Image 1 (cartoon, rainbow, N blue to C red):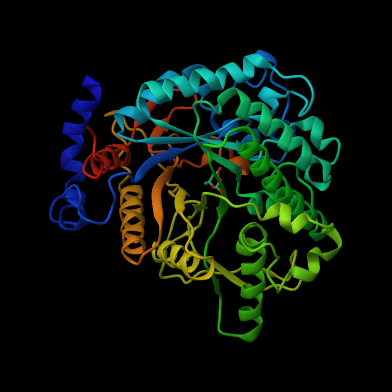
Image 2 (tube, rainbow, N blue to C red):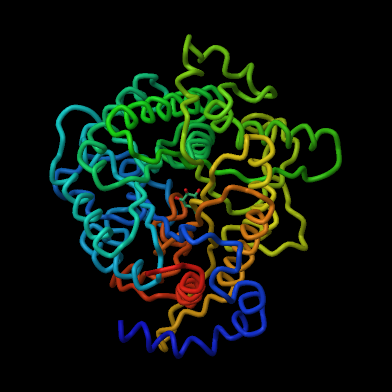
Length: 474
Ligand code: FCB
């Protein structure tokens, strides 16, 4: 704590550009500025495979990411999640970082194969105990645990039975949901069913860039539909078990913009929008697939499926990073693919354009086209080539600017009547960024992957200060 305070002092000068006379002072300075309500949730997000490590410990079974990352050429530099941030052993330290950073909630995911090593059947109580300790640790610090049941790490045994190509995986997922809920449902009140099923299906089953590395449109469509079914069945399972849970799910939603004004690019953008933004959202909220892609799903839909997918939820989680620029691409997976973004934009080191207006646009679109549901931004953040110099201070000013602008965008959405209830930064820690391994840093806390030492970055202190000024604590 002392260290934290000292560092805050030293960093104050570096942060001056963001706090004196700028947006922070002008628009956000006072508590209760009339925009962020008293119970607005300020959180940080992570996921199991990206941070836990300890892949062989306490009876954990293998997940598809263990298999994928150990396959030559799949992940940059041959990186794996074997150790990751070693959060499994260092979670105390991470809970302290959350608490000292003034966060009020923590979104994490449970690893299915830690709890049911083979995806189904016998329960590994040591795995459940880990989450039990974590939840108690969070509650003891006054942090709201926000539990996501699935962040892409399917048990490998289920993959051997087809994974999300198999309809039955959705029933297995509901069984797993019951196990987690019966152990943690007394203390965890905020549940997220899936993380970004749209992205998981596209890159895991469509292009093969993510685990399980499968390719082709039919596979991608089947995975989408079965993930949608899994969502519905898990919502039913949670509701049947505990009446007092707040249940939602998380989808990656980003506005799609055509690369040019040509009719080819415009219709490609429409199709891409339906596939990326609509294929999980519409079955969930409207009980239909979006019209431009509905015919693609007909053969997968059995009687009653679209009633199962359309379960009432308490909130929708929106993960937003950047708008997407799409062009007509006849040779691609479904005829529309990423094209060049305008060159006058700034880009993160992922190559993603920086444009906070897309976040406000997306939130307002949900207000107008999806019946103004309760929303949380469950992930938002930026990747830059941070360095930890000898001084020990990571001055990630680009990330601060990104966060500042995106928080400004949610402020705009709130004043436009969007029912936004919270904002979670991605991510608390630098971590295993899927196919990019450890080469991409998204954390507000720097992790040295050799020593596993955590060093809060300037953005962490900036956010801590911002949250302090916008929360009402007794
Ligand atoms: C999201 C994922 C998350 C992380 C960020 C950068 O799509 O949900 O795990 O990889 O992107």
